[in-house]
Image (tube, rainbow, N blue to C red):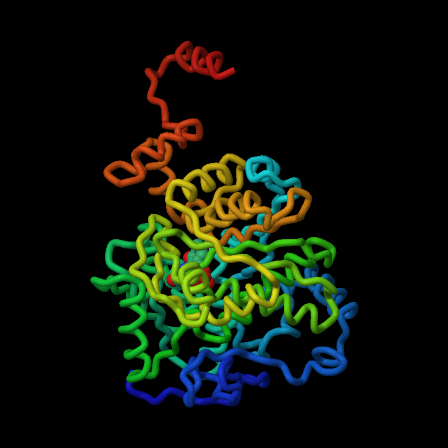
Length: 451
Ligand code: F0G
């Protein structure tokens, strides 16, 4: 790993600082002048649209690609490549990400007190989380730029995804994760896909600090969500969602907030769709955090979002156990631009919402369930009206954290925690596995009593 990082002119789009607006080299993550984050912009879209294509032509092109046999067309990310940074087709690493379902959630809607509730289930991606949509773009860029090594710090999903894309693309990968604080399912994925996996004796924020130094000193390409190419791929969730709704915007989109890149990506997509004439009205984007990992909520409430209040994060929704989110400025811009809200939810509220989403036959991991828990609060506050249409972004598959689900149903999730008394409200949703003698009568009796 001694050769120098390659700077290339692979990208034709521009990388710009969100703070001072200076352009940056394509393989950078922060502005060399003001250290703010970077984003990818598309000056070439004006005035006719990407490649001279208007919204109507793009909609048709993207729909037609669904019946193509080409790998890039079968990807739910690269299908939208006209609104992504240009990467040579032979460098694209795809595991057929995206193309995720939009489900109606009638029972959760009722529980929240609204009529029209949908889930855009990003947990139905190849490695089981939304990370795949951004990983395909950023890992492909790494390959096109000539990197041999990629690395990330992660609460588990980014590492699973990065390890898979690196393996598919012939890259080596290094994962830094907080020791003992990620689900074993996610850890096992990273091992299975062949990453060098290191459990650091710190939290996610500590892993980020260490990795930032490592990538400064070694020719390793950083695949954390500060990587602007990640955000571009993650944008496609909103394009696909709008396509699935016949290009009719919902009133609200609600996303969980961790490092705050996903909500930034959704907002960037909506901004671009408005600019390109795909939609005339932009949905309100709201971000929900866990009470124990609420830096954005605190910053907005305590200083109007002027500066980030970093916190020591603690939540059972380990995917969003993040106290010092890198993309907070981008997310805040989206919330402000679209007129969304920030809200926080308790551990018991998360567990309840997760069980309700599971009981719809859909399921998700705990971090995704904050969206439903947050929606309930936003309805109570009158911010979401009963007849408005809401889409929750479910970010991870229910199997990502089977331990949480098993403990919930066995009734010991909150054992030994301060939430034990409050968690009694969860009993009606708990379904502990039953043990019976192997007798037909016993099973029939059980069935009859369940009628
Ligand atoms: N939901 C899930 C399932 C996640 O894994 C994450 C982030 C988020 C929500 C929050 O998204 O960071 O863009 O605000 N997981 C990262 C990881 C940090 O390392 O897997 P965000």
